[in-house]
Image (cartoon, rainbow, N blue to C red; front, top):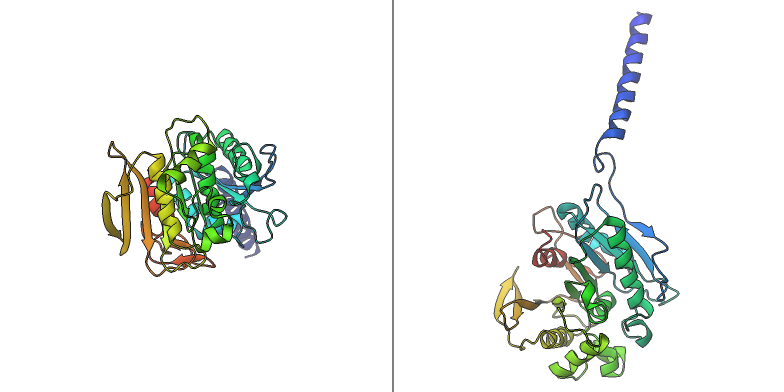
Length: 327
């Protein structure tokens, strides 16, 4: 009887050892899940930002890169998860760069979309984010022609900055509850820009973008905007101004070529002279200030609700990913 128990014990030890060995040789992604990791030494970093990223296990070379920037009071990892971008990275196979604003730059953790020294090419926070893109492309052998940038609120304002100052780096961008480029300067104050809007013609808005990258002839990034109609932090007029700015940059008019609804919300598409969609807008009826998400396991669902991340049965990240050809 004692010998049988000893033999059984040995067999259990062998089984456990075999399981451990198998876990070591299984392909990445089977044994462990990827996580958001900080990256240091990504450049001169004149804006003193922090770089985080999410790279799915086993991601092959030549895949797209999405830069996703958090809103005020948020952080990189929380926004990456809450918005749905890390979930979609696993689902569709791309990597995510998650810049983070330290409190030393802004006490509310807002990206400084309104500071002249942070919104010019080669300077401040704009240059830091550009350096993050270069580092990520090098590290993961990413596809430099398929880099996209998006963000919420102040992160949305910084998205506009990146599209204007480094248009050659981004194929498209997505702004949630954000501001047009140069809005604070046009309005004379970031708060006037947010709460009232700046009085500019489409041509004047477009000129601000063109002045950010002198001599650049295109191609310009495409833009998609999400805006709550009940947002009292960044007024809906800013979505209209973003549309005016980027249709003008693309040489398109300000009359929608498509007006329909998506998930019950008004959706418009603006095309250039060749029929290419260059600007899209989603007016999220009744939504306040935040990132639209649709938590769940459905094929079009993503994200998880939280502070300034709002369940409205439409996941902005999914809509962006589809329009960018990620999924």
